[in-house]
Image 1: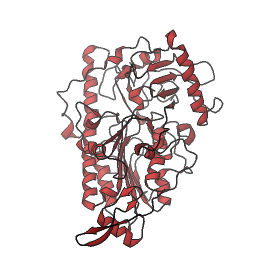
Image 2: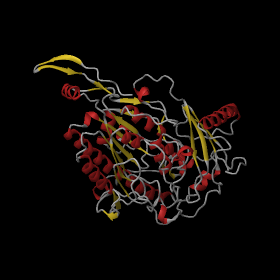
Image 3: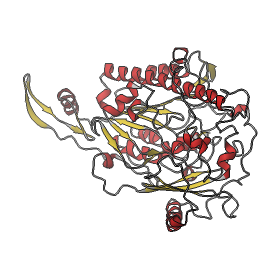
Image 4: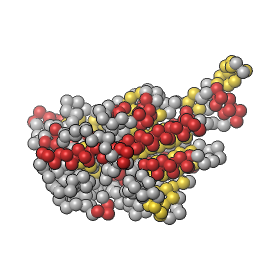
Length: 512
């Protein structure tokens, strides 16, 4: 809820002014306080929301990456909050994006794959802000409805494209004017469009700008200036790629597929599968390309900060930088995402807002479904009822003493990408339990997984067959069932496709 202005009178060398005016938890400057008091208005913050695609939780120097240097992204964390244990509830683009917008799990909003539209009748946080008088815009990759680039409800300005878009010369539908090619590098083009919209006259309304980057989604194509930055950095396969003795067989089978380290690596390897030791060079080149695309995103953040500072809007703008899902970079012999393993689940979330915190790191587990209620609270807008997420604003401010200790993960097998089974998993602060439903009510198709995350954060050893952990398995199974039931996902309601097993065929080129 908005905090009513509560001015205090202070002396000033040019007279007496109302200062320290608190508006939605923010201490305004003397000039801002005086202006707002005279106008008799509540100052509402703007929102700059920047969403990256498939960015790993540690792909920033502020998160300790040893090679990537991202000073502009880091600035959000340095001057705000970094959530070091932030997770997606479905590690797949469309379902996760829908969860970020609505505060609902995938089974709640209905976007279970990369081909489904976000139902137009659902309320999401930009739509709720539009109802509260905000000007709202979405520019970039939307990717809910593969072949639909038309404007979506809740935005006064909408620019997107069909499918994944391209790193160079994407065809854009700008505010419903029809598709046309816009020359240039995707990250630069989307930033140009965002800045053009931000500079327009907003009639003194607060604004909410959502930027959906393609980067660093495959196929990883850096700008030429960043194409060779990492040429001298060696990137081996991670050790866990070969520690599969205790893992279910499907993980080993995946290594030679589209989503495995011996596969085509998103066209960075031309002849495959290739398990030769020297073929790691293809893997290294792929990772270099991935890192290179992130450098352009960092440039984009620098340009956005420059605009906010120049316009005087920085201190009244909530700046959010996050990813939609994580990415496996060779862990367990896999690339891409979808699984319930840590690299697939973890995403970055950085939030800068003066009234929230400065230079704080939050260790509790936050989720994609928490974004919507949190931003609405910070903006003083009406909450969305009956959602699965919870605002982390009280958590950051130290007033929430009952934050979650566990949560569940869901993913449904895709016939278009048959490299990952149906997944239902529970993650607590210390443990993870993963099981693989068949999809027809029969016993699980694959061996389950159990990890002690405190002792084994890289999930090297699956403990599911160890007798001393039998009681822990029973405990976590029950907790998973309870968590799913609490969200409305009972055994009868949990419909999923039949698990047809890991396939070796490549996906259709049109949907990669």
